[in-house]
Image (cartoon, rainbow, N blue to C red):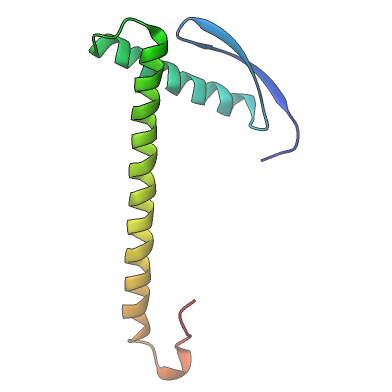
Amino acid sequence: MSTIKHSTRVTICGEDYNIRSDSPPDHTRAVAAYVDGKIREVLENASVVESHKAAILAALQITDELFEAKQAQADAADAMRTLSGELKRWLPPGKRTPSA
């Protein structure tokens, strides 16, 4: 991330926000659009009328997605370590390096 602060105007659930961030404006707008979409999805699919409650439910959904992505990343890293160990057995002894 850069040290330059960007000020980006976004709209989430009909409310305008001025976001100051190290991230480029396009990234900030994309994140805001994603959050807006999740809140609107909750409002459409649940019996929630209050936008603040919809925002909390959307935050729970987004956090669940984050946790699932982190678990998938950890699973992939474990699989790569296992594969690396298997491949090392096929290398000549002089080419094998200790695991990090």
